[in-house]
Image (cartoon, rainbow, N blue to C red; front, side, top):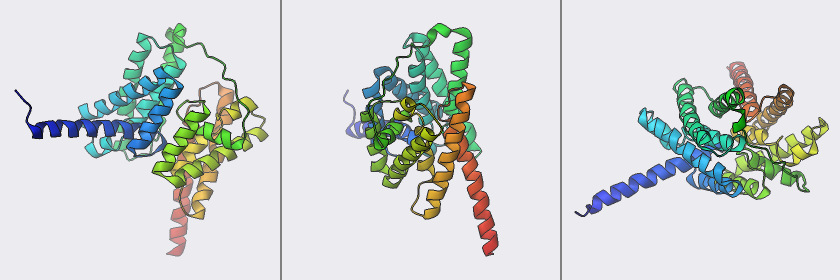
Length: 300
């Protein structure tokens, strides 16, 4: 029996909507509610590593499916808010662990946990950003260290190519999603630029400033050239980017805080992931809100 034409269209519409939601979830890694941005991110991840690409895709699907299953707010789901932390968990697991069955199980479990944590914060109107990803990934790495150390991948030293400040800035965009290649970083920059030119340009400037400051704090040049001290700055800049001069001030404050937190975390041995961005942004938001409250009260 042939499927009615309207049913086919409805089915195609639902499929397209789900694909769009998945891609928006990946785009939200850099706070962009844009399907094409998410698609370019996914292409860049697959270019860098097939397991990471499949990990990002599987985790985003699992995180989004979890939100649908528990009937979370549909508008939030369609914005991709339950996909980005899950996506980062998928990429991180494939970066730190071997691509074996147990690791893929951890991708699924981690994605579900990240989506549920995201919902916990959304319900309380608290800007968690990528904190669910950070927390879930820390737990996974801790448990693997304790109970299955042989699951960790053998790290391959990445050789930093000759670079300049602009190249380091693009690589910082790549490192937001654990990609060290210049091409992936440039692709991610373009992806953000398409969605929000001002956010992309602020992000690039912030990454360069953070890299230069890291150099003066005697951070190894290899790490700087790979973008490891710029990616948290990229995210901070995207959050506070805006057309006003004061927006630039908040960007600067947040990237200084993020760099300070990154330097402190190196001494602890804890993988910093995007935690410096999260903590620096929380602190900056508190300062910004207090400042605006004082200004408004002074005007009244």
